[in-house]
Length: 354
Image (cartoon, rainbow, N blue to C red; front, side, top):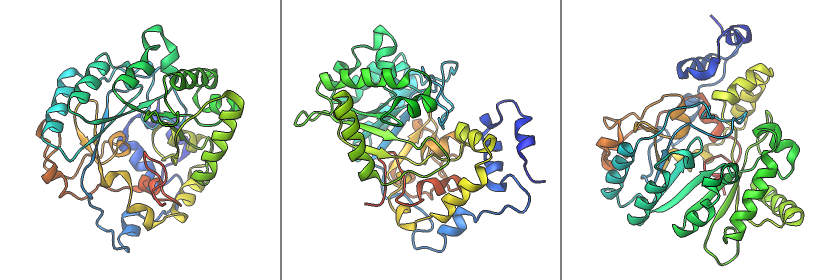
């Protein structure tokens, strides 16, 4: 039986269940609505089956707790979420990294990863291992509470690369997506990061921004948007940053909820399918990244993590981490993968087609 908007709305917080999200992605919302399977589409190209190119990044979700509740959040994060990575699981991550010298980048995400009580300890331990550390900072956490005000200096001390979401260079669109007052707080946080040297020429302190479209459309060209962001933020607020990453919104969690409630689900999926680019698939993040959930389980990417699509490997948990075995797996695919392979592609580092 076909899924309908009415049946979805009858559920409380419909998309909290990963298996239900997968039903929506696979069956569509109306009878006879058939989207070509991503796996079948990719199977006509030389990249199939999609396999790792060698893990060089470990992306670690430190928990789903966040001081914001963003409309597009694929993690469904918020202040009420209690899922937090324990120090014991962090220690397992450190042990895995100690035996995997080829993984030189650790990408810390959430939620707001800084809200994990062991966040600073973990960063310090990662520094001792000599790893490059990235933190996915929502900016407002820096000014949300006095205990976070020194984060720019803490990041600087450990040479942490800061990657921050900023939906737009104006308050209207930013606040519409992320909540009232978020733009103003984000600007204040960016100024503090600039004062610490982040985003400044020749400091080596990288500050990158992330752009997500605020509606049911794909991002435009990354280079042009970056130039526009730099001009608007520089002229309007004196803010400097290094790179802008354009990331396509994937149809899962709250964004899937938005697509259904606004009647945009079918048209958005058609946009993604029509824009499928096999060249973009060659450089998607799942080929060089392994994602670790807050409770230590392993996934091909953080989107698969939110859909509970575990890695297709005998190694399922960070305690058993083995890069040789994991590099032999096939990457788990589903309809949401169209989001990473549409147009110029999309990954945690922006476009995948250069």
